[in-house]
Structures are given as structure tokens and as C-alpha cells.
Image (cartoon, rainbow, N blue to C red; front, side, top):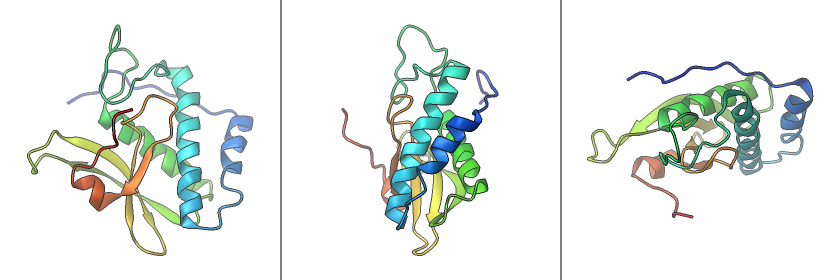
Length: 156
């Protein structure tokens, strides 16, 4: 397995500050998960413009060509980086980042990957999966056990 293309991107100070303000009034882990969804969507959008993945379609759909289309490994990797950025900025107070997870290989399903984070109060681990939706849309955040069972959102 190899990556088609590896790119570097940056976030300007104003955009980064806008993302951090999403976490200003998180009074619960649920509030924070909602802020994470918004932050990941914003980061995907901002980075997508820079690395030509702004037209990334949901799942593994391919329009006219493959350039800029991300698979679940790309999505899990990028989302994990975004989660670490948020954690390093000190805005995650209810969660901590965790390693990526894979499913399907031993369950007779198609292989699939996701970023994860752990609720520090309950120790519940959540999948943070942006692969199901097109670039810039909020990722799914769901209990990892449910995600591991093969769960997928209904087609839109």
C-alpha cells in the first residue's frame, strides 16, 4: 500500500483562531464532540483548497478522475492529525486522542479505517470517521464498539 500523494498545508492564524473558538463553551463531552465535528469539517475544507482535495466525494466515489479523492486511510490519517492539533492546542478537555483503528479484515467485511478519541470521564472510545461524507462535511462520531460492528450511516 502506498500513498498517491503526500502534501503539506498550513492554517493561517485567523482561521486557526476561528476553529479554536468552537471549543469556548463546551460544558460537556457531548458539546466537545460536536465542536470536534465542526472543527474537522472546517479543517478539511481549508486544507482541501490547498491540496486539491476540496472535491473529495463521500466514501470511495470517483467523479472524472482520482486526483484529490481520499480513501479511508487518507481520511483516518488526516483526521488523526487534526485531533492531535486540537489536543496540542489545549482545547480538548473532555477527550484525548487515540490511535487509528481498522475493522473488517477478520470479520469478513471490507477493510475500513478511522481516527479515534477517548472520553476521559467514561473511557468510552469513539470513532471519528470523515470518510462517509464529502470534503468539509462533519464527520461521524460514534461509539467505537458500534463502529467496529460494521455500522454505517444511512446513504444520503
